[in-house]
View 1 (tube, rainbow, N blue to C red):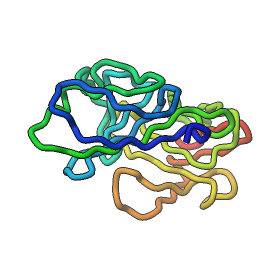
View 2 (view 1 turned 30 degrees about the horizontal axis):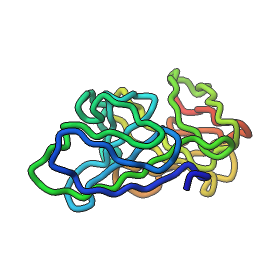
View 3 (view 1 turned 90 degrees about the horizontal axis):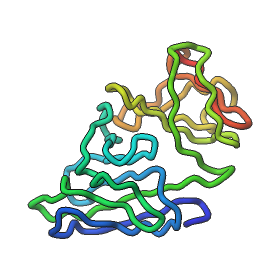
View 4 (view 1 turned 90 degrees about the vertical axis):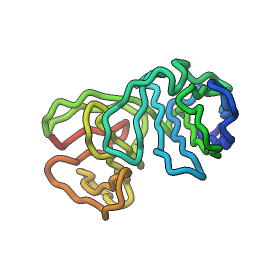
Amino acid sequence: NTTAGFSIATWTIPNTNVYTIGHGLGVAPKLILMKARNGDTNWDVFHTSLGNTKRLTLNTTGAVSTDSTYWNNTSPTSTVFTVGSSFNQSSVYNYIAYCWHEVDGFSKFGSYIGNLSSDGPFIYTGFTPNWLLIKNSADASQWRLFDGKRNTFNPVNKSFRANDTTVEYTDNTYYLVDFLSNGFKIRGA
C-alpha cells in the first residue's frame, strides 16, 4: 500500500551470498522489520538513521550491532533492499519483511539525542502521533511502544515493551512523552 507507505515482502533464502528483495513501495524504505517464518531467528531491524552497516533486533534489548555484511553495506532503493552474506545459511528459511516509508501527515521515521532530563527534546513529525516506538540504540534498553488510545491526555505514561511478553507498563518518572499537534516531546529522564 504505497498510499500508507507500507509493504509486506516474502521470500525463501536463495543459495547465494548476496541478493535483493523487491518491496514495491516506489520509495526507499526508512524502516524494515524482518524475520524467518520457519526458523528460530531474531526480528532484524533496518532503520535509515543507523545506515546500512548496522542493525537492531526487535525481540531483544541489545544495542545496535555493526555488521557490514548484513545489509551488504547497501542502502535500500526505491525498488529493492539488499540482504548480505550473513544470511548464507545451511537451512532453508522462508522470510517475511515489513517495510515502511514516510507519508506526510501520517508517518515519520527518525532519531533524536536524549538529554537525561524531564524537559527532553521535542521531535517534529508534522502531525499528532498516535503510535510511537522508541529504542535507545546505544545500550541494552527496552523497546517502548506508546499510543494515543490508552492515554488520551499528556503525559503519555503507558507503554508496552516490544522485546518481551510483560504486561502494560505505567511509569510516571522515566518513560513519559507528550503527544503534541506537530510531534512529541520527551518528558522522562
